[in-house]
Length: 140
Image (cartoon, rainbow, N blue to C red; front, side):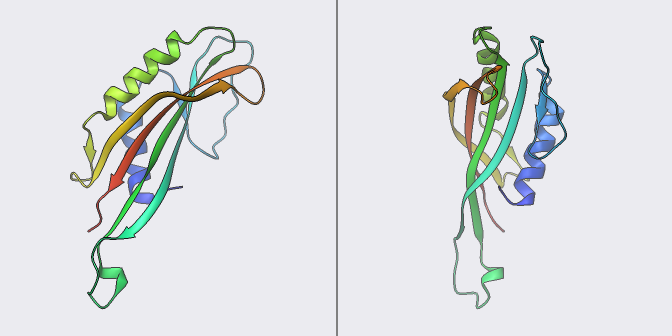
């Protein structure tokens, strides 16, 4: 999990700018479609590190802390339906975040991967096609 600030900003950005299919975030009510050819996306945002970038203020709370992590989109397509729809949605997501900065340029998105960690989902009905986007929040 990430802290609230980058998560809320990223989630709002996705909601306002991605219209390709339903995006589901962790621990929310959702029932995957059964017997349909509907693509959907499971989004996750994790923090890899929170690191002090300045020291010496006398109070660690007032030092600058940066946070880094990964934004992950698991694009779920029906099993045996091919991966072209997933690739198209992956390309759209990558394009949305290419060079994007949020929170007054403090939240930046960098390195991205398409198709890593793919494979059959646990329930056997879906093929998972994963997009990963590195992010960094520059503290204040």
